[in-house]
Image (cartoon, rainbow, N blue to C red):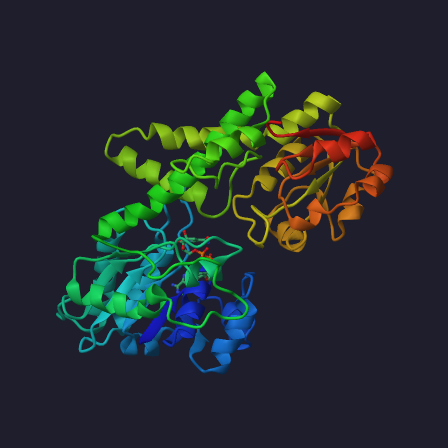
Length: 458
Ligand SMILES: NC(=O)c1ccc[n+]([C@@H]2O[C@H](COP(=O)([O-])OP(=O)(O)OC[C@H]3O[C@@H](n4cnc5c(N)ncnc54)[C@H](O)[C@@H]3O)[C@@H](O)[C@H]2O)c1
């Protein structure tokens, strides 16, 4: 099929590269010329494992191109994905400006004789499919006055569940595919588009192997549009709540002297609960959880319904992000002038994404309290220096952050931090205080060296 993907971010790149790999002809569109130039040069504009290799392959096969001008490709497309950003606005709801611009311009370039399925892949507030339909109609009527929308296009919802850091693996081997439309020909076309993925009939790319035991067919949830939109919010709200729940239990563990890793490991062995997303730490972040919870709560409140549970998950997370600095204050008392090393800036390991990262809260608090902060991240120091305006020294080697510091604070559990040489680190520190915000290190290793070590809920 001819596929157009609007937005070459995490979701657009994963969607476009995956569909091209499955044999479709894909045009990726982004308003940022530098992203388009990178893709044309077979270099991914975002950091994702396997992305450069797969992008190189689909570029070489001629099945994927990139442009800043959607126009000519719209008329030929069988399916168009809207995968643009929907950042939170001041009220907490999703900002739909980018979706609106994309939808209007799609409408302007539609060919009324060639029906197309327009798919919302962006995470959009409940009911947005109708909004998108009206925006596409506005565009269509500006170029083809009087053309009926029905028969020219239909809007479907196909929410995305990929995780940054394993975006391609999640796209190629998804837990489920949610297709939201009441229009039979649109449902048929989307099922056909995804058929090789559902049947897993493609050879696994060398750079993104099929997980052991992955079973075909991939489950397809065929729903109405509103339900599909809500699946996305409900899933993210549940996952965020799971982490917040583990953090609440961690706070109780600290009071009563229990070990949250032992507690949650045993709790998670119950198949009704499951072992994932039960890690205590300094909280969740990233571009999705906070934004999606806030949009879900906003929707509930539009109907006079107080989303008590979602609000509590957010509140526990807000409290948890303060754990490191509060623990530091409890130990060092005053922070003014003290050199503090912060390890990890991205919201989780394996991504270069800094959006809504707990590290930003930590840097903001530390610098406000007068600490001299030296920060390290394996991939994101330059981006952090540009994105954030705190008076922080960013270093490119973790040893340079640790040497001379009075405390080491771990925010993001990058695997390279797990392998730190603590004997050397201990010798280079001004004071051997380590606050482990991700329960990455073992007290049994650090404490015998004479390091004062604290972790979350242990
Ligand atoms: N990142 C994730 O893990 C993830 C997972 C699931 C769903 N989502 C949702 O998917 C959507 C996209 O997220 P993302 O992380 O890929 O965003 P992103 O910011 O990485 O990428 C969005 C891209 O869209 C481009 N864009 C904006 N307006 C455009 C237009 N009119 N035409 C063409 N391109 C345009 C931007 O320049 C940007 O490159 C959001 O709604 C997000 O909530 C994200």
